[in-house]
Image 1 (cartoon, rainbow, N blue to C red):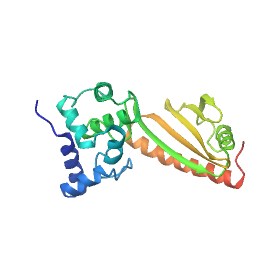
Image 2: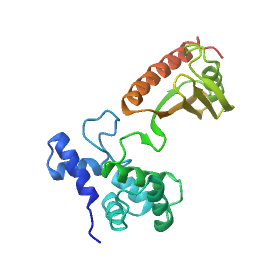
Image 3: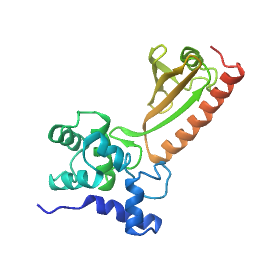
Length: 224
């Protein structure tokens, strides 16, 4: 079977976007630079070559050649992920299997940055100097958001919460992590977004909202 050299295709896509030499474009991809959804450098890899090699025992170029040789170009996300997991010993649905699959799809032109099987997803985090219980309660109170913006589906205090976004049928998944007795992090993932433009707008929206919540928590004005 002819190897399709998907990794080289990915390098050339970056070269066309940035004007870099082949060597510079390859190095930037392997270092996993320009990972912002709005970066003008073309498709990107999910993580660095060093990290994927640490997690799976193979680097990006090896993974892409294996996938090409196995005829995975043009196959569905589920087929590729299953092949990676079952044939290469990567735990099914684990981060590494998804990272390999999504990165390969980007190289083949089948998936944009942030795109998932059910739409686009964005994630925003903030760390604030309050306990995880206080952070959870302030977030759940909702006074820092416009009225009616979200509707709670499930919640497990103080670890996680899930919400519907009635305006467009998307969903918001939130996790909370303690970083100490008086420090914690909230991570908001907004999923099922229709396109990349909406994803970029919603990511900025969440950045602004979480910055506002963090400010209220610092000065003690957030509802809890």
